[in-house]
Image (cartoon, rainbow, N blue to C red; front, side, top):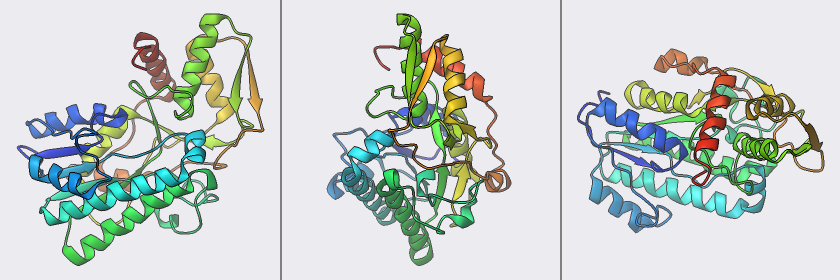
Length: 313
């Protein structure tokens, strides 16, 4: 699809990923990208979603809006996260069908994969087991929306495509310790510890669990590529192609923050899924996309942004 001149709408466009994606889409299309904002458009309400489509008349939609957080937030809000993500997705996708949207890109999640999926995760293994328990309600809701997108393609001919990104990080992330993901939480902890001269910093879990992280600008580039080039019903992984333990991750963030004290791991806190790493060959083959930002460089940029935008962060 040629995006030039298209009316594009991004749900969640004022969020972390959206703030990086919207300028790229505007550059690709040459027109202003519509960003409906909460609470004026509460997408868990069907009538609000319908009004959004009437007001903006989009030809292309990227559905990023989500209720999401780290392990602690997922454990505290399983019902809210399941209902909120299902409701938003049901309304956004069905109204896209009713309003004749030419293409919709659905943002899924790595949390949809089975807890013990073989590493690296391949899209073909998505249905081989139940997700990790702490984030299963969120992951299952997103998984159900993938099925909805495929069903609407099969029955109604809707051009809906789905991508599955790993954990994102980078400038503009959310650094609230109660709700943030692991990288922004560690950035805040280590920067504040370095400034206060603290002797140690606590890190959740054993440190043995592994994760893969994708720099937010790389993900934004991938979503533009998906809007332009992705075809077909099958989901596509978006990742950086590497795996790092939480212990090694903490050491990288500590160095970037200038913290030289001790790391104390708390095994009473959950590790979450034991391992996470994606096979990203499908994205390279179908979209011509591959992540390019070196991890330590991305961490350094994230730390610098946090220091320079403390009140907002």
